[in-house]
Image 1: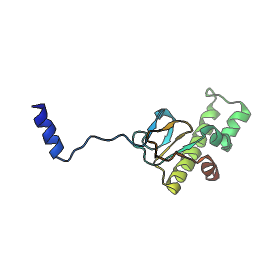
Image 2: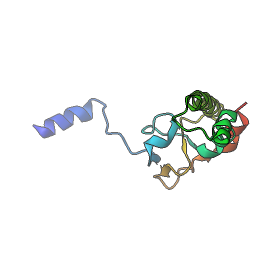
Image 3: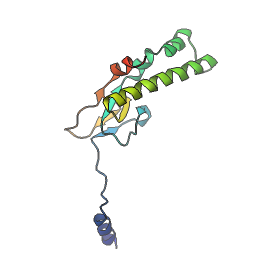
Image 4: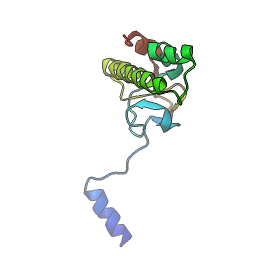
Length: 126
């Protein structure tokens, strides 16, 4: 019975998915894309990017915390700028996943390392 089922699956053109070239070690640190379907990844330093966003600088300079109403307005604006710049960089360079530095693992020896694109995101912050 099992062999018959395998024969049907094999003849129907379905195949088991092969392991890709990359794996995301921390899906919570993916800024753009599906961490299970990585073909052309990029990595960035989220801290470095946020540090250059004016609204985030205001949060730091004013010592605001998540208990302050102003914090939430500024953080929303900072997050929108961050997401817009990351998305523009990914589109410009053809990346399907953008994640934090160190969160993409190379599984195959011949796979190129993820491109480090922090500077390109900084350039697009506008």
